[in-house]
Length: 81
Image (cartoon, rainbow, N blue to C red; front, side, top):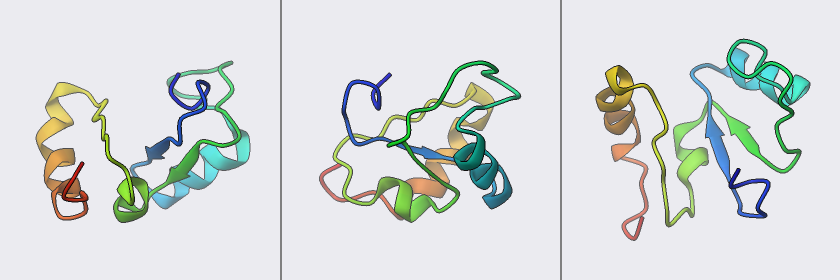
């Protein structure tokens, strides 16, 4: 939704293989089949690249993965995020 609204948006994939598949197909066949991902959506497995220069970071993950994801991103978040 954010990327479709023209906002610079990143999606952090769990692995490089998943990121590559999402970039090539522009579709999440497992969780969102039939929904095309915007061409300008940055899809990466690199946490630093996903949050670089971002002022707003949304963690949109299942509750059981929130702590893991927050810990992963903690060292990469810009000071003003």
